[in-house]
Length: 395
Image 1 (cartoon, rainbow, N blue to C red):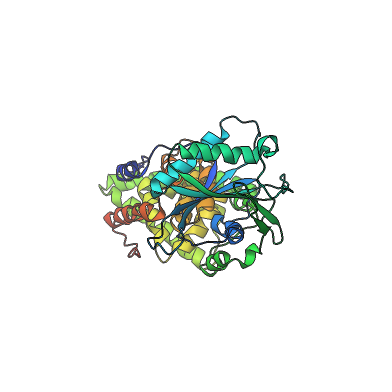
Image 2 (cartoon, rainbow, N blue to C red; image 1 turned 60 degrees about the vertical axis):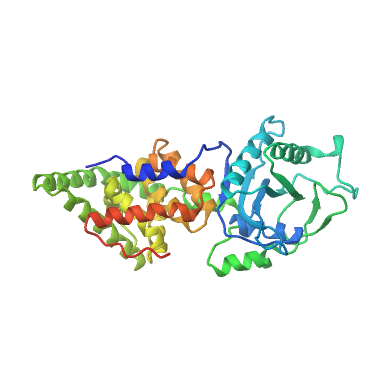
């Protein structure tokens, strides 16, 4: 059976990707948002990130709205982990590099920053702290601002809050006399807009990680059936080769997966043996690459549920295949945090998985979901070449 990543897909991603940075972060390739009040901006952070961040630096990338009467627009959001050694010398540089990469992609020259950290205390003085009183995150923001200035990027505002909870105090890290009380993030207009669009807002990032936690009992059962499933797949492919029609094997395997998507839509869970057969099917790169097209069709939500369940049931390169399909589906619908967690799970399962590496590079480089949707068109074309119509791709 063929096991190389489709050359057309590799060429596509070569056109999309830039030099990746190496900062761990959640990239949220979101839609444009207008937020004018610092308290409202801070309260909107959970909705923009997809969960309630803790010990984090959240950076909103701004672009001009096109109307001089309106405030700039939030075009993208990054979350960077602050739960690290305070003495790390290159932290500000690394964070600035990450933000500059996204700014270059978005053609932006201005950002806003919010630090969320329960280890901070609100300063009593109404003037911004200076010198030895600035604190570790104050020094971080100062260095971060200086680093971005070298790239002609302005930090237009920076604020701090201990936790993203109603009633928490927030304060300005750059200017004097600006502080206030945080409104309820659950009632933020941005939160309401995201909920109305069906986007979940999770209480912590760990909830995302738990979604991908392997079901160890099921993975053991699947592993016991895997050799038999691979042997049967190999025999079917060999038979198709003898008939001079290898395409029939790819087509039958793709159709088999589509039936499993239909089962999932009907609420029918796969058995351990079926998960093993699914793993064998996804090892056929023509089948797997075709399935990227499902992420933008009418069966996108159902397919995503199947990829999530499969990622928990499979291990090794097979888990990486399922998690990558899940990541792609989350990516193009704007759920950057889930996409990032799924890609991390895939890379942990198989560090050499080429499609995972390509997608992860796109996410970290700030490639927009609209651009990465092109992969779905490529997948649909592969399926069509096999004689399977996956339906139109909505615009």
